[in-house]
Length: 255
Image (cartoon, rainbow, N blue to C red; front, side, top):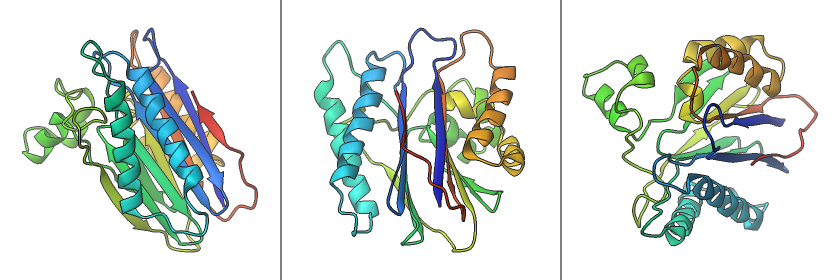
């Protein structure tokens, strides 16, 4: 059973440059989160263009065919070309991307991301991993210059090494994840405006106390709203649950 819930909030900013969606089609669930880069102009258009491009790709993919990493990489390349084609000398729009496809029939998930929008994975309620930020701050962690927790408010956190629209060719990081049957699998896709205020421990704690994706999201948002100051960034997240429940949740689109 695949269920999901998402939200988006412009925070203390004038515009919301986040975009995403969650949908279920047969035995597959899809989720996407994109965060338009501030300071480049057109971030909202870039994130929406990426979401619309991947929605179109999903609709054309044969239901009987397993979705591969190679196909997802090609979709993301297509989205990158779309954003590049929208750019002008005065507007070099860019966006991050986090994309997830869970396939109950195949017992697997495909994860892909570019930039610092993250995908977190929990199995039976226990935190397993999150995706690797393509940022200067994440490289500083690898170099031993700062600790993992220091990324959240590091001075170079917003300096990205990869983004949709940054160059003619984009290198998405993809991962195929086996999902054991008779286990519960939980995913969280979120922008940096969300994860900077909610720790991995708090994500796990609120998950254990939640009875639905919606409740999990709301419990985490309570942490964010209690900490975010005036002028905080756009913040958005989508929770995707793969459980043994019998009811399916209808498609939800974030605009």
